[in-house]
Length: 97
Image 1 (tube, rainbow, N blue to C red):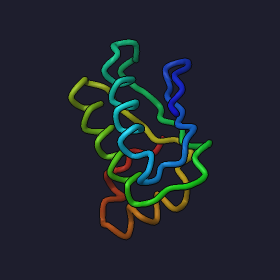
Image 2 (cartoon, rainbow, N blue to C red):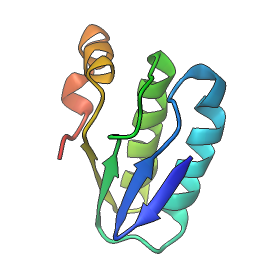
Image 3 (tube, rainbow, N blue to C red):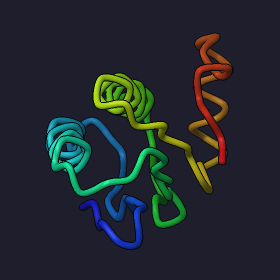
Image 4 (cartoon, rainbow, N blue to C red):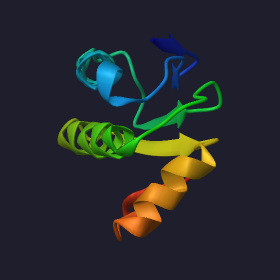
């Protein structure tokens, strides 16, 4: 679901409502583990499917990262995620790598 390697996190599951709670908790666990640097790249290259829940999960991860003093940057976000963020008026909140 989420792989941790070389200071980055890679989401490998569809970011849709059915996976939202599991993804949220897995990401929070990784961010709270204490094994990350101050800058973490969240790589979404393997994410083939997103819905509006993906945006909620990413925003929650950003809050968790900020609480831990971690700067989280998004790499390879799916076009649908960017479209949803633009539609909801929160695209500027997504820190792209």
